[in-house]
Every structure is written in C-alpha cells, then in structure tokens.
Image 1: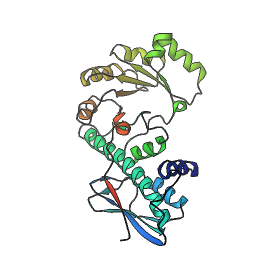
Image 2: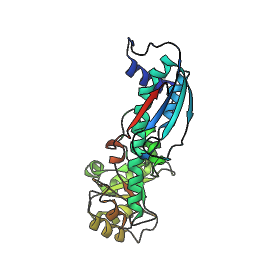
Image 3: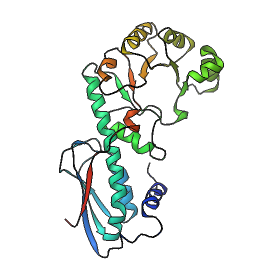
Image 4: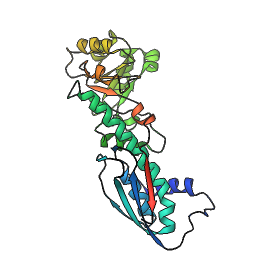
Length: 271
C-alpha cells in the first residue's frame, strides 16, 4: 500500500527547498504518453502522487495492459503548480514500474515456449523504498513476487550451511518457525538437492547451475513430490527457455527488478 509518507518523501526529494520552476498560476491539463511499446504498471503510485496534490486523474489503462507508441496512459487536470510538481515523480514511477512489468512479461513469454507451468519469480534484489512498486509490477507482468520480505519464508543459504551444516541449519530453523512458514534450502550441486529435501526443505533452490545440472537435480527430486524445485543465478532472458525445459517449478531472476530498463514515457501539459 502506498502511503502519504511515501508520496511526501518522493515529492520532497524532487521539489527540494526552493522550487521556482513550478510556480505557474491557473489551471491546466496533462497526459502521460508512451513513447515505446511495453506493459504499463505503477498507475497506483501515479494516482497517489496526483491525489496527494489535489489533482484529478483518469487512468486510460490498467496495470498489465499493453501500450504502444503514442498511447495515452493517464490524463490529469488541476492547478498548474500541482500538476507540474507531480509530473516528474509520476513519470519516473510509471516508467520504472512499466519497465519491470515489460521485462517480466518477456521472461514469462520465453518460459512459455518450453513450459506452461514454470513460474517466473522476482527476488529481494529491489530498490530500497520501492519494493512494493516493483513487486506489484512483477505481478502486472505475469510473474510471481517470491518473498516480499525475510519473514515470508526461511531461506537457508551457503553461509548458514557453512556455520551449521545443511541438516543442522534446516533443523534449527524448523524448530523456530510457524507451521505455516516454508523453508527453502539453497544448494549448488546435484548431490545436495536430495539431501536438502531429505532434511525437510519445502523448496530446494538450485543456485548457479547449468540447465543440464538443473535437469539432473530435478530428476533427483522426483522421489520428493512435495518439494518444489527453484533455480536462480545469472539467468537471462536468452537462457530462460533452456531452464524452463528442465522441469523446474520456479525460475527466479533478480534482473527483473535491478536491471529492467524504464519504459520511455512523456508527460505533456496544456493539450
């Protein structure tokens, strides 16, 4: 949920202490227009910004809908000063979120060329302060949010294994979590995949493995039908089909949020 505090922080960052450029009298109208094709997202954030400023907004599209060059995404009307104060923040939020949604949809489409069931998921590699925006954009693109924060699932990583051992780490965290909390165990070898499942993992993360190794690990987990197999680590749009073909349940990609290129948008007033 986007709060007034979020909007205040965004506007304070952009407006600063002595805004002269936006001191324009009267009323105006404006519209946000796509300058390239993609999926739109971040409209809730744009609405929150303009709503906070007392500017009327009408969305032409919903999150997840496709836009092409020249398509109008939203229209606003209100005091010129407030429209101008909000336009850059809104453009940045919508452009960034739309870039995440577009990157996610491309990855989902690439995965669907090999598998109808595999999920494309984001990670916690998000921009501080913008995780909610980015995770919603992933959903708009057809992806899965994965963990929203550390409390959503326990992930046993290599540093935990180094300190406690694989079985010891799983046992320790199992004692401390709710029955409703899943435990995921990160492994980097095919042999460790069934070990993690046997230790009590709900999800086995096959990290930094080739598609061939992931395929072998998925086969090794077939005797544990309750365990989900996930893979991550440097997976690109080009390599998604190869990983989707392994039979893995989830493909996680940090690039969906930390490397997505913003969708090019333009805000035009007085038209």
